[in-house]
Amino acid sequence: MPYVTSWERIGIEKGLERGREQGLEQGREQGMQLGELREKHAVLKRQFDRKFGLLPEDAELIDATDAPERLDAALDAIIDASERDEVLRHLTS
Image (cartoon, rainbow, N blue to C red; front, top):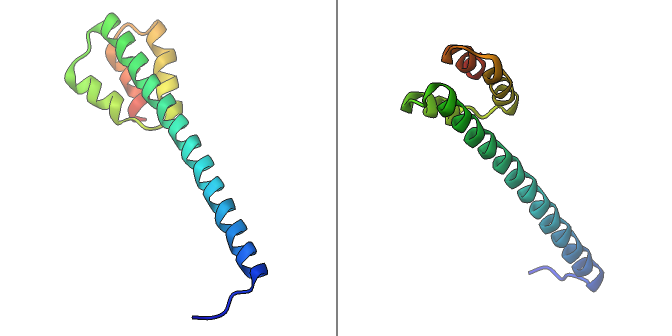
């Protein structure tokens, strides 16, 4: 086992602490993004159900969409849409 000076040990400890902090921050950010995505799924399914009636395959397509910009486009489209396909096409394009 190689000898580690106190200076090296301090450097290693500081490096480990920085790594932990960065990992925690990354985890928080990913968690927030996932939460926002799930909220968009829930809102779109609720609005879709009220306007057209939510079929199981519609719910699956909405839940499978992981691009926030596609969900936003579908949420915008549902306002003026007269047919379900006008909304769903934003999830697959």
